[in-house]
Length: 236
Length: 233
Picture 1 (tube, rainbow over the protein chains, first blue to last red):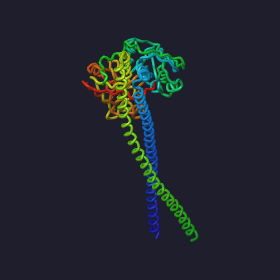
Picture 2 (cartoon, each protein chain N blue to C red):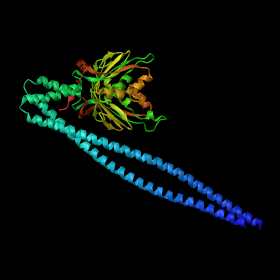
Picture 3 (cartoon, rainbow over the protein chains, first blue to last red):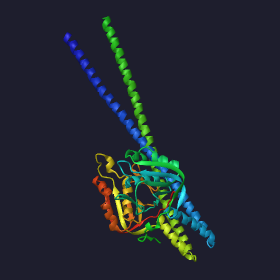
């Protein structure tokens, strides 16, 4: 009789234990899957956000393209209208010519912007890479004209260490470097001072620098003796 | 007897509670699963919608770009012709061609090199070293300029005085447009000199040491597109 009760009780205990273990495993499993779901959810949301951003960007880009298309079309229409009228024609051409000359760096330009001085630190001297980074940062924040020690930067400008000097437009230049940039001064300064931006890098290497907002920046034209286009044939 | 009854009732309450909780848990779980499935489906639909729209926008961009190219070409022809037809405009004509060339507003062709770059196939211990960065591109452009390149483009974007290269996630931004790998840099110039300058450069050797794939091809003839956007100045 006693034995029988004990047998019954053990059976009950064992079965409850088994059920509880089973439940425990299921619960842990469930917990894991909820966590995974949440991670994949946030991943999906991120992907969705990314593609939304890309869509907005390409829409803006297309708007710009449309505007530029209209602009050129208007120019052509005006040119057709003014054909024969040489003063008007000349005006139009002059405008385009000026635009090309400014982009090419063939004219002196002035405006407001930043005057940045960069000098060697006690242990580290400024190298070509530092200047390249700084210049790229300036361009990315829409600097419209840049010079280093009065060498106007154009498409074919190189910045290259050459012994004690740095060669820019094939001219030997040494520290301190005076970088001038014409752009919205506040926007430009913010871009430079951003976290892990180029100025933070300068701090890290103890490079001496100063940034000054000025409204009387003058950037000279490129020294035309440095330009060579003898290998190029404009496509007809 | 009384005691046994009490135990029985206690047991019953216990079972009741346990099964009640289990029941609630299961139904909550069930609902959350169906919710997740629904949500996933709607997210997926939303994603697909946007992806389809993006493809349409990209196609539009292509048409707009090619329209712009044609128009710019026509306009430049018109200006050129006017200058050539007019008496005494020879000097202005020279000035025009010179400025347009230097600004990067003409398409250029000639001998040169083409550099194709891809991230490393397998990531190194630090994945930072296995992908191509904006600074790498900058240094390569700089090497090409040192070696006397006359015209340069990155994935078809003409390199002009205001051009920038910036990493933006997995893509790079050049002239405000985004491109992903492979990055193709083209340069007009003396092919031998350009290729040698790159093969010999620190930056290319460093990138290759991290298994970044760089192919340099000398070409007798290549075309470099003109800048067709509006520079910031």
